Image (cartoon, rainbow, N blue to C red; front, top):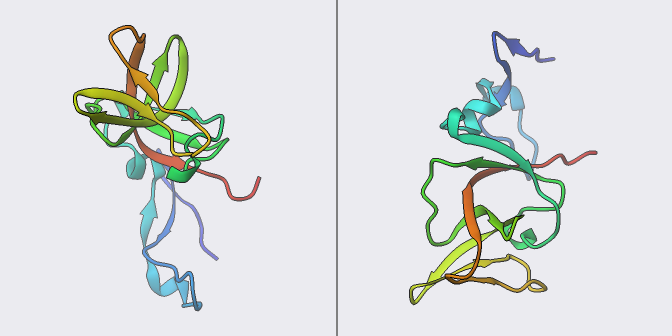
Length: 137
């Protein structure tokens, strides 16, 4: 019915709105082609993808196997989801600040926050700006 529009990048048809309730004629809503790189990545030189492993961010809508879009050029700030390296291990958590104390906080009740102190070996690699998930394996 619709064909892929292609130039040097792969782009797909983009529908501006699709009802999650009663059906509507989708062709009436086709706006243009959508390139996922253009949609998800503002600064290509500073961005990368990372696959999530684990369940500590499920209440933020990030699930095991999802792919995060991470932008290193965004300065990490309070309440942002960040990719961090703690003692050599990668983790994805909310960066939270309270009373001049920083923590990496999970979005799952079964996981504990990681308090950041001057003794914690922590590097913030970037800020999560998007998540990609396959609905059908």
